Amino acid sequence: MSKTALEQWRHKAGAWVQRGLDHRLRLAVTGLSRSGKTAFITSLVNQLEHAGLDARLPHWPVAAEGRLLGIKRVPSRHHHVPTFGYEAALGQLSARPPVWPEPTRGISEITLAIKYRPRNRLKRRLHDNATLYLEIVDYPGEWLLDLPLLAMSYAEWSGQQRALLQTPALAELAAPWLQAGASLAADSPVDDARLAALAAAYTQWLLDIKRECGAYLVQPGRFILPGEYQGAPMLQFVPWVWGEVPAGLNDGHHHGMMEARFEHYKKHLVQGFYRDFFAGFDRQIVLADCLTPLNQGPGSFADLGRALEAILQSFEYGKSGWWQRLFAPRIDKLLFAATKADHLTPDQHGRLTRLLATLVRGGHRHARLSGIDIHTLALASIKATHSGQVQHQGDRIPALQGRRLGDFEPVTLYPGEVPEALPRDDFWQRQGFDFTEFAPPLWQPEAPLPHLRLDQALAFLLGDKLS
Image (cartoon, rainbow, N blue to C red; front, side, top):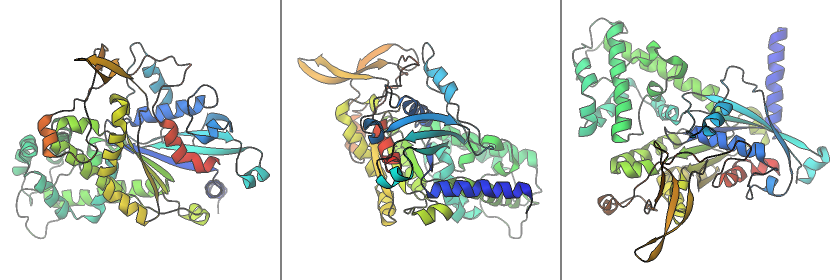
């Protein structure tokens, strides 16, 4: 073994031992577009940096009990993974007027060293103080939507996408790529330029149905968030939806080439992501914006449920004992968080939690059968409103005060009631819910960011590792 290979092996062995002894935890943060991943990680790191000083974290035992000794950012051990843009996000939040941080469009990571005094007697005998290295990994939830493709052939996936076109609104938006593909013979020689143009039109369709129809379950997910693979040939294929295909085609023909690229995409991007990143996570939080689809209608809300179910199917569940942690780490705690709880009056927070729990109930059953610890919570990573009451027709009713996103004008409103179970027809007919987007609060960088229930998220995700 060469000197370089030996050093690499020692580095990996040291990381395995740290994970086995609970000195290192890899926390994955994901969510579909506009769920607030960047805001969540920014606020989480900000709360940790202020913990023990002036952060309000009463439900996080290590902070509430005075056992938290210090937290600092440290270099990541994964030199090939981009660093999460924490400072840039803080700069945007402290601008005048403040703006929400730019969303990340690929994978990134930030590592914290959390020094604490153990409560556990055995840990105290070994060390008066202990350090947990927390690796926070940010990745797009859309990438998880691709994992079910591993069980599909190109023909099966094409049939699934063909079925989507039975929905009139989706078919209308698909007209450009359907027309372009109709003139492409399955058995004609490959024309890379035409395939690239067709894939671009298909990608635009995915973006259009997300924006216009509130679609969440879009595949392939890397088409809309390609990261470093922008323009790669393996992202230049579409489902074949134009009738029968002659037998005996190979990658010298249009249909054969797209089938080959579909298989290459699965092997190198989908399997590669699962092998290199996903399979190594210890804890996972999935952020979900349930409010926007309530505004967009029943089709959007139903698609959110399907997307969450697809995400749930991607997880490898099971408790991680020390032996498993050394050689086969897997997710043993999973938190589903309904974001933007501050966009509702406090009396609606419990209903929002129960609504999200209902959406993922099928996955809950699967997870519990495998022994995973799972929890659902409504939170606001960065609290943008103040709650109170206003006088209306002689009654006092709950209301929110904040600044409207876009023009930063102050508004006072009551957004309405959230259904605590899957909405029925009468909910959509009433249109009794009006979710308004708020701008970030005016914030001074020397203070911790305001939040709702981030301490409860920390307690669930990290509590047992800081005991």
